[in-house]
Length: 108
Length: 114
Image 1 (tube, one colour):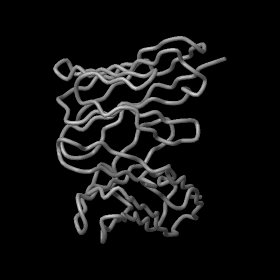
Image 2: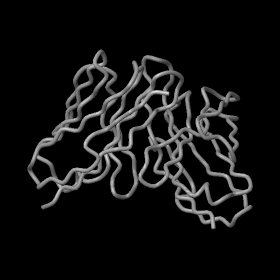
Image 3: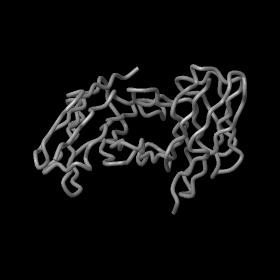
């Protein structure tokens, strides 16, 4: 099956810093989503982005499907950004294949 | 819209007991999914459904059953619970089709089997 690799696995930032999270995938995809899993375990949809670039406030994402990677940018990070960020893709069929996530801690 | 709702939020089962995890969506989505998340990992697909009366296995279906009698509901049944089924269970739904298949998740059910 398709492999999804996320980097870095862990990240500690001071409030106000910027960061870039990366997602590499091993095959072509029909669907790519970024999620934030908050400390209470909820999965929050950030972006549905099989290709192209999208922005939502301090967050933006870019997927280069031909080179099989996606990037999530977080600017001016806040403590509420802490949690785990997952990249998930659909290659064939319907299942989202999740990476192992990037665990982000933003300190005051 | 409430989106995707799940009950219960938490449950403790003894080995060998059975239970049903409930999932309901009010977005008129055709596709529904059950995933499980083990500690420190991403989610894995248990079962999915592309419409009422149609279900199919995902990556980790053993020990589970599903049914889809209505568009809104997609219950997951655990028979003969085992410690390996201790996990957080997420239900999700999507409109369906290749062009718009963004999946939306419920809040999860945390299950412990002792």
